[in-house]
Image (tube, rainbow, N blue to C red; front, top):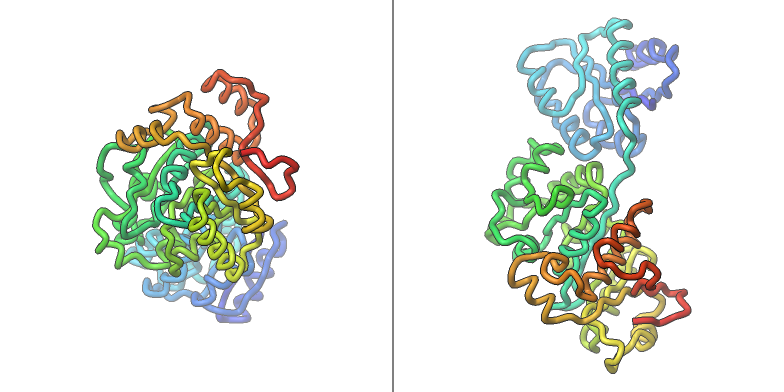
Amino acid sequence: MKIAVISTDRTRLESLGRALEVSSHSISLITGGMDNLRAIAQQEAPALILVDGMAGNAGELGQAEYVSTHYPHVAIIVICANITPDFLIAAMRAGVREVLPSPAPAAALEAAINRLAAKLAGSQVKNPGKVLAFMPCKGGSGATFLATNLGYLLAENQSVLLIDLNLQFGDALSFIHDGEPASTIADVTRDIRRLDASFLDSSTVKITPNYSILAAPADANQAVGIKLEHIDAILGLAVAHYDFVLIDLPRTLDPITIKALDRATLILSVLQANLPALRHAKKMLTLFQSLGYTRDKVALIVNRFDKRAEIGIDDMRRLLGTITLHTVPNSYKEVSTSINHGNSLIEAARSSPVTRNLAEFALSLAPAKKDNRSLLDRIFKRSASEPLGFNTPDASSSRA
């Protein structure tokens, strides 16, 4: 286990280092105080930060709370000279794992570290969830419909959270749920000090056992109080607890949107095959390049695509260059019916070619599992050998 030990007193720091060197853990000794916690968590990425030299002032715990919220896999143990009941409560609320007296007896220090090591060894190591950011190239592209329904299909075998970050006008929940949310992302950010996995889970709407949606504010005015650090904390927690985090974004590039794009494993820009949308897509790709995003982080979804239309895959490639394209067929009546009734497409039109297309896309995104293909066969009762509608830049075919 990697342990970062921090103290303002160099002598005490070296003493703690000697006490810990007999263990098999990797130890880093850092001279500093609580104001260094954030940088240590980010740069050192330890499993444990051991903080020495606290005097029992609860006001010093702000950095500990930030680290426990933004870096949930980093544990904090505090050594304090003046332990009071109020300080213990404040430390617990800030996410501190244990508080030891100062100077910490060697046996007590060893026991606390061994408890934490045992807990980490007994817990299942989980890779961070994949973040898929959906962003329309032009209004009416269908990004929200695709995000909500892809999430529904991914949740057949994965845990999925969809976060509606269209903070002023978001309505992702209404696409697959006929009802109002009990709480929204605005409620979470107003009580951000409570943020943990349980609080986040209880703030979502459960669509299926594996699929949850954190709704946008019901009133656009509530979006004013949502800050960049709130979104960063929510996303950081979400990827630690869900296999997939889907983000429904507006077209505007503000700091919150950029933070979500930075976090994304894959940015999915949605458009339709018409010239104005292609012009917007080209501008968007240029913006992404200026933000430092590589082309393998971005893919385009061409919604309502008709291979008989005037603009085809080859035309799009000539205009947009080397980019991954996924095409979704046009099934306007079935899609409109599902949206109007607040149902997922698989519930409204199981045999729709769009349902099949999105299910295959979900299969291409999810980690391989033995039963994935058989699951799709059971759902659609069709041949498992059909190709995907996913066109990579190097694909020899331009199938639509």
